[in-house]
Structure formats: structure tokens, C-alpha cells
Image (cartoon, rainbow, N blue to C red):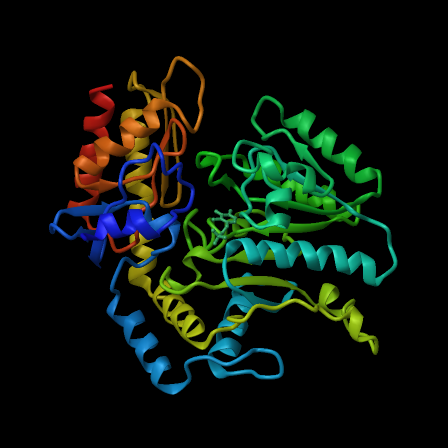
Amino acid sequence: MGLLERDAQYIWHPFTQVQTAPSPLPIIRAEGVWLFDENDKRYLDVNSSWWTILHGHGNAYINQAIKDQLDQLDHTLFAGITHPKAVEIGERLVKKAGGHFSKAFFSDNGSTAVEVAIKTTIQYWHNQGIPKRRFLAIEGAYHGDTFGAMSVGARDVFNRPFERFFFDVEYLPYPTKENKAEVIEMAAELFGSGEFAGFIFEPLVQGAAGMRIYDREILNKLIGLAKNNNVLTIADEVMTGFYRTGSMFATDQIAESPDFMCLSKGLTGGIMAMGLTITTQKIFDTFLDDDFAKGMLHGHSFTGNPIACASACASLDLLEKQDTLNKVEWLTQKHVEFVEEHKDHPAVRSIKSIGTILSIELEIGEGSSYFSNLRTKAYEYFVQNEVLLRPLGNVIFLNPPYCINEEELQFVYGKVKGFLDQL
Ligand SMILES: *Cc1c(COP(=O)(O)O)cnc(C)c1O
């Protein structure tokens, strides 16, 4: 049996209605921005493999760091044990997060990084005997697929069967220029109730909602309001971290600083699975007690895995190189030019960019839906044209690896133009 037949026989794929989905692509190798299938057909991974592969595939520097670590120390448990690469990545990222941050807690992915922030928030209040239990989130949010992360995410078709098991969350309308005053007023009122434990948000861009880019000033106000009302703030930087929005973290672009920062996706350069939740000394201190039960009694088998930590350290080395920052700046500028050139295209309802993300909302009659035929049509068009791009509803977006060169970027832009022109 070929790979696809065996896949169909034994494998259950994520985010897929298997009955109607086309066969998966049988990818057998990757290099730089390119994925190659078993027939040696290539696809430009402009999706950065679910927004993870920051420096492209097969980066020699990260690969070497992983090999070296594998020879030195493969894996240990992380309770009662520490190791150099965990300490190094924790220290470097806490320092980069800046200001008042002080501690890093490891987990395995973006959902668990969020789960840890939510559990820490709940227990922060619990440990102090303060009855705050509600959370505030933003409409359209995506924070992951575990129960806590789903609870604070948008209540939609992705999690309908589970809804009645979710905890109590209020949602602010997605902030726009028009509803700005209303959103601020609503947040002030909710926070003023004194019932809210935490406020969670994707800073500046809602990823899964369709790479929706919103205003810095509103976010800054909302965080400020939360702080004034003693509500803990959780910045889910799982997608936005590591220069996706042009700065190291999206929250670097605003004055207020959150109480938690959740990291994953690009954290290891996208090669190893790892989550990290960064928080403050003030929060950490509420878990210190003679009573064991007041500790953070949460962990995963692969928490702080040394190979993942080594990969993250190597990725961070690359992010500190001027070459990489120049690339981010160049990509940012290219996207700005593309937006300018295409904002009046008849197939475009809206087009925006922030940092290395370019997001194009396509004009459709029926209103946007993840299941619109356009999504399937777009996906297939791009795959046939050697570009791997996963639309979100009627939104197509590019967030390529930073190693993409001029020729490859023009190749993708050309295909996007071709797609828009034939709509
Ligand atoms: C992808 C994502 C998550 C979930 O991360 P996983 O590693 O897929 O569990 C959480 N928050 C945001 C903003 C994301 O983009």
C-alpha cells in the first residue's frame, strides 16, 4: 500500500472532516521555505507550517544545536531536576519580556501555555482566599483546544459539543474604530464588578479568527483598565511572538505590560513542541507557602524537554542576529507595498499587514464563513500553484518563514495576484 492508502487506513487528522476533505499531501522532505512531496512536487510553505517554522525548514544552526543536545542530555523529568538549556531559555526570555517579568513555566504547546496562565490566574485568587472566578475574552478569540483554552475562545462550530462544560466567560466585541468607546465602556463596567479573575487576549492580531489586526491604543486601554481594577491580564503571544508583528512580542508595541505572556509556535524555531508561560514575581509569590497545596501542582511528562529547550535557544540566537532583523524589516516593508498596490482590487474586501503577516479578506456575497466554498477553492488553487497556504474562511494570509528570499516572495505574491485576478 502507498503512503496515502496507509494514511487513510490508520490516521485521523486534526481540524478535518475526513469524509469530505481531499487527501493530505504526502510530504517527505523540506528545505528552507519548500516542502517536497513523494513525487518531488514542491510547495512554498508560506503558512510556516501552522505559524511555527520561523527560520524555515532544515536550518543548519538549529539542527546542529539539536544534535549536540541529543548527545549531551536527551530528556529528564523537570520536577526536582534542572538543566542548563531550560535555565538558559527561561532566563533569556524572561529578560526579553522585560520590565516586571520574573518567572518562566514550561509546558508542551500553545494550548497548555494558555492553560497554565488560566490555572495560575485562578489559583492566584484562590491562594489569597479572594472569590474572583470570571474571565473576560474577546469575541472571535482562539486560545487553543484544551478545555480551559476552549472556554476562553470563541463559542463556535469548533467547540459546540463542549460548550456546556465551559466555565464562565464574558466576551468583549471585537474592537474596531467604530465601537471603540463602547468596548472600553463595557470592559470598565465588567471589571468594575470585582468578579473578574483575568482578561485574556491575542495582542494586536487575532490569528485563527482570520488574522484580524486591531488597534494598539484600544488594547493598551483595556490592559490599563484591567490593571486598575485588579484583574490579571494574559497576553496570548503564541502566534504573535518572535517578530511576527514586527517586534519581538506584540505587546512590545504598547505601553502597558501584561501579567502573563504565553509562548509556543515559533518558540523553538518551530521544530520542537514547547510552551512557555512567563509571569511576574508578584504572582509567583502567592504560590509560596508551607502548605504544599498552594504550589503550582501542574506539569507534563515532556515539560522542559532539553532538546526543545536547545532548539529554542538556537532559534533565539538567530533572532538576535542583525540579518534576521533586517529580513523581518524587509518582509514588513514588502507587505506594506503589496497592501498599497492591492487595496483597490475588486476581489479584495480588505487588506492589511502587520510585521511579517499579510492578511487579505476576499470579497464574497454571502458573508464570511470558514466553510465557504471559496476556502476550498483558494486552498486548491494555491496547492496546484506550488504554494501551501491555508485560508481562514474567506481570508487568505501569508506569514512566511523569515528566510524567504526576494525571488520566493515574488513567486508567492505572483500567485496571490493570479488568484485575485481570476476571481
Ligand atoms: C495556535 C494557537 C494556540 C494553540 O497552540 P497549540 O500549540 O496549537 O496548542 C493558542 N493561542 C494562539 C493565539 C494560537 O495561535
